[in-house]
Length: 350
Ligand SMILES: [Zn+2]
Image (cartoon, rainbow, N blue to C red):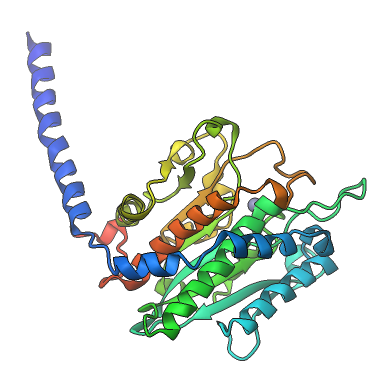
């Protein structure tokens, strides 16, 4: 009887506590107002399969020799990105034509030559000091021992060209007087394949104070499908979106529902998930500094980290749609009235 009574009380506490939390979450969800829907659709549509394809066939061609950090091929890739931003009249975070942040050879224990992160920047029209970082890594595995070039079309050519197109779309909006309220930093990391070194270095030596860095949307492989999605390719794995800012998570969901209806798969976001993708790409160095992140990822496939990861195997329609999702999410965070809120400061949750 006594046992029964205690269980009964516990059940009561449980049922009281649960609705309260769901009410808080509902209030948070209801507070998210999507901004500029017509503009989002208009500028997202400038991210085209043709341009993504054109850029990716160049970026993952043999000419770039697999883009291993510190090599000539990587330098060509850095220069390719720099020329692109100069042509598009998209400035640098450092002013003039200085698009490079150099990681000195000592940072690699002198085992490889110095290597550059590439940074392009669009200044916000109202809150320029608040920064949205959109990132992907530009390096890959170089040439293997049999002389095959690791083209890395998906890893991470797909993320790289998605960023190029997003930058162009934001720039066009700015030219037409619809520039983002907050600033956007387009950040191409070196040395991810050597252990996220480019993002580690950037977060140690940020171009803008990290306390003003609102979020990091990081893309690492979004042009292919994995074995689990052979029958439904309209998906993307999202990792990390709810860890530091539930607002970020629900913004991402609301944007997706409004414009795209992609299956957002959170399989790899589970705490303790054995692959630990949350800790395995560049966003992790931002999350470690208490900056909310989303990691966009299509999962591994047969060509992962092989020389067969080539641009002919990319699904460009899918790449376009996923890039547009990242763009629209960034647009919302850059243009909504208030700065994205960490859970610890969120009035709806506390
Ligand atoms: Zn990668």
